[in-house]
Image (cartoon, rainbow, N blue to C red; front, side, top):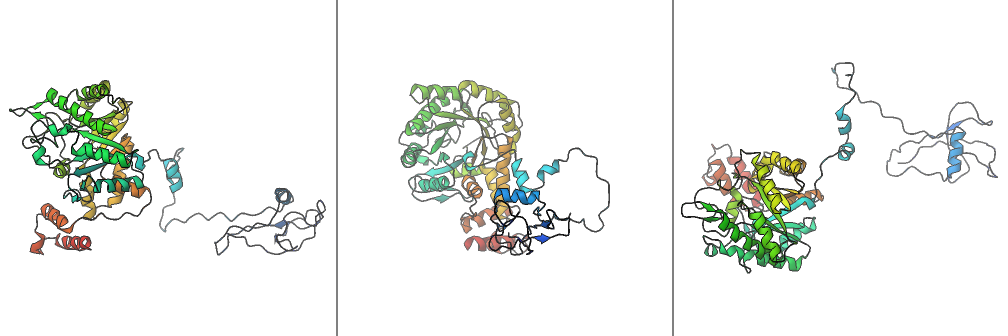
Amino acid sequence: MASSIFNAPCTVPAVKGKNYFGLKPAVNNDLRFNVGKKTSIIGCPKRVFTVRASEKKDGPIKKLGLSDAECEAAVVAGNVPEAPPVPPRSAAPAGTPVVPSLPLSRRPRRNRKSPVMRASFQETSISPANFVYPLFIHEGEEDTPIGAMPGCYRLGWRHGLVEEVAKARDVGVNSIVLFPKVPDALKSSTGDEAYNDNGLVPRAIQLLKDKYPDLVIYTDVALDPYSSDGHDGIVREDGVIMNDETVYQLCKQAVSQARAGADVVSPSDMMDGRVGAIRKALDAEGFQHVSIMSYTAKYASSFYGPFREALESSPRFGDKKTYQMNPANYREALVEAHEDESEGADILLVKPGLPYLDIIRLLRDKSPLPIAAYQVSGEYSMIKAGGVLKMIDEERVMMESLMCLRRAGADIILTYFALQAARCLCGEKSTPSFYPAVVLVKKLEHVLGNCASSKNMSNPHMGLIDELIYVFME
């Protein structure tokens, strides 16, 4: 910005030996004012200095090199600089009815009228520090894409895992949780591999802690990845999940993970009494510093399907309704929360996330402990699918869903969007994750019930399939 000023000579009495009064010229001895036809002061017509926006709008208003005293003297003498005019009120469209103003003492829209004001009064914030990044690992060296979870992979624990953690740390995500894909040959009915000190998870923890000592590592405590039955606990002959015997195994698993360097162990099994037993086991082995994040309100949800595909850990028979919570129940979450608190849990988790915002808010209001929410695989995959099919704006829906979890009361969020969302928050331009076209087409065929290779032109989705194949092949 610069000022438009007109030259007008003026003879004024000297002040303190100076031959000027008021605004001192920067270069020459001509005072540059807009001359107004007003009553003279001290024998000199009043000059009005007008500050106008330059047409170029490429710089600040030019300074005249005056001292504070000289500026004040000019104002006292009546040479008051003029500001730019107030913009005219915007006109309403033609045909707008003329009505009297409503007699409202409070208009909430006043606090939403500009981006700056909306940001000033925003009640909920979100940052990469609020994210815990779930990562799938396996024994292989290559990263294997997970068909039902676009952009997610089973990471090779020695290479891909380290690289993914580095990417997350670059954008401020410094907390992860590990989920192993265990070889079938190591699975058993009692899940003994879960507490093998040389198992996949302990090795991964040690590797990461060696490279990133300040990385916060959460671990999953449950038997389903290690069970030949695919359940979170030991299964009796009649199909009953054995509670106390399972808790015994979980304690050994938690201690093994703590020994490897885990910062937070997270029992997701939903066995009764496991938090207290794990706390005692950890303390007895000298791991008083290791935290417990309890899956307090883990519901028997249908949103877990893609996760079970990722780990190949679906139950071999039956379901998990005898130990996971009924999705219809609300008050029961308070019972679970009370027990976990009394047994020594440090963090309470709700799973799934977005469909259970009421439970997150319930625990937030009733418990002083930090609350975690798990935005599970089904939630992630639905947003991804909607984005791929151009039904929604993936990035906006992603960020809105995460903000909703925070608004409901979650202090931290376990989300497969952690890296993508953190990049968005850091201002990086998002780029679509590579998703093999063959896998994409397979999923679309399944969803749409149509074989893409048949080129069935009567299918209204055929053009979309062809377009997506082209985009992802590019």
